[in-house]
Length: 124
Image (cartoon, rainbow, N blue to C red; front, side):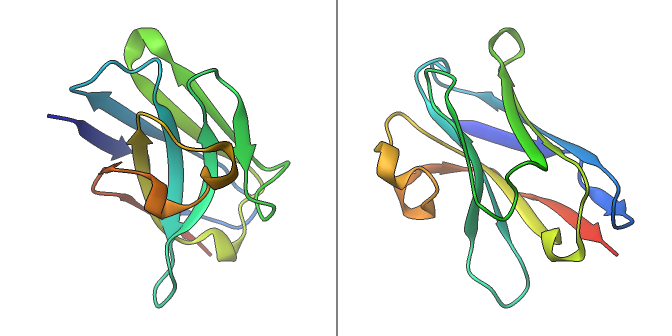
């Protein structure tokens, strides 16, 4: 049974920083593609950052240079560091995982089978 649990959300002023964490269990982690997605009220879920099993990261254009995704294999945890936060970064942030995702689709929510419950981020 795959389980993903996000933490670290909260309220922050524009220009501030947050670090989100995603603890996972129930599968062999190293080969999975892991992703962070977000959904603002009234909008579709969108890809923010992903990290392949190889460790190669990918980012949405809207967060490049401000967000960093990383993983700690020993702790079975994936992180999303967000700096220079903007009000448009507000939303529910979800962690996701899948055993295999094509490189062309890593920011597409439909490619991921497993999801956490989300953590809320508010930037004002």
